[in-house]
Image 1 (spheres, rainbow, N blue to C red):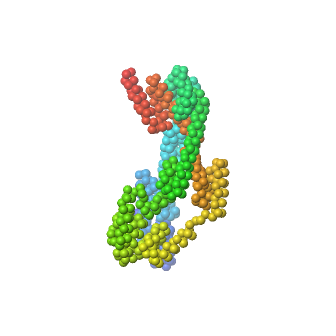
Image 2: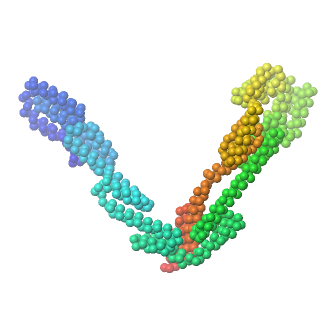
Image 3: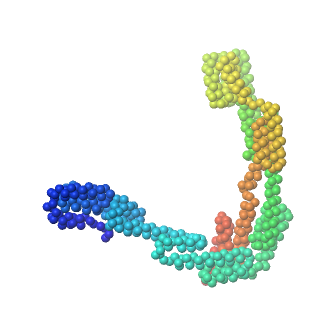
Length: 620
């Protein structure tokens, strides 16, 4: 860099020129005192990173004492720092030339932090470097703003683009082109607004006004691609107005007939076609609204019917459960669960049934089991062998039962009794293990399983003190835990039930659910409270599902989108059938914007494009 400041050579020449004239005064005491003062002042300046002035002070010393080695070393060190900072400056300017703004900035900051503002030549170069960085950064910001403005222009955000183009020169006042850009954007905005007005007029069926607007577009932008297509559509709409009106009337009339036959979905489709073609649109929308109300009413009736059916299954399930007919109960409850998979009351009783059936299976083999006859024969043979004192044979028969049903209580008890006759030591070991297992089950809060173990022990060894004590303790704790519904709780539950009925009648479903849950909590066997709770929860879920799925406003929005889609679709069909393929494609492309997955429309577009190519080849 030409801006590099090289001071080392200049300082050396200065020293060589002045040393001979002052050497004679080196021994003077005043001069010695002055040189010592200069040395200290130079060190202070050096510490302040003012290397140039430090060198000046130490040079004064060498004038009086040319052989002062300490001062020579100090000067050499200071000149080294000056040389290093000068090289850093050169490096910073080199990075600027390469466009490495951040690296140049860091380099200049380093020079600034390691030098003194009193070094004017150095600081003037630094100021120049920082100024260049600021200019380059501002230029980068300017270019980014302009790029953003160009993108906004491309996407039709003209006002924002203009604001950015007006703002950009603040970062680079010397830049040009922006006034031209602003005028270009204003023109594009004018054309866009005029085109939108022309399209709106066309959509409303005001074809003459739309034609005028499109002709204005062509005056401003003669090469606009949309204008010729829309002008062609307008001519078609005017020329074919009678035929199109008859077609639209047929859609409306079909809708009315289907409405009378209560073919709701088909009627909606026809009425939407009529609206799409702007024929008696208000009446058609009125019919659609009536149909929606009727569908909603049907859904509500169906929901109520289903709720009552679920309630019936729940009642039946509870009845069979209370009669200890758990399989019948489970069958009824599962039917209810098919209709209402989230029903909490049904789920609770299903769990009760499963637990009850599991307990029954643990006690004895059900009659319905394919092994029932075999097990009964083995039990009979086991008992007969035990009675006649043939304990080893009895053990074998009960072991065979346990091979098929490992948890059969009767077989386990009788096996242990038989073993007690053949091998008392083994039985004591088995009973001790069973006692330890019962303790472990109790630690894991499995009281019912622990009780089964202890009762088995006492069946074999009725005087087992450990088992007795533990059994008594568990049964005592269970009695304390088992809830006995007091008369006061029953009365309170009945009051809550009646309160819930009134809330349900007033459609306060959440409040009704809350009080009925409290009633069931006070009296778990309160069947009517459970049934009404099930009904309220089911109805509440249905309402929430309807609210979250589609509100009235959302349905209206969906209807309007579908009508808009149909309008473009039907117009595309009409244009295509009249050989107006470009016009058809433009309509179907609007359909794709609304529903990108509309496959048949995509096929129609491809078909129309092929027709365009075919006709072009024929004409040529």
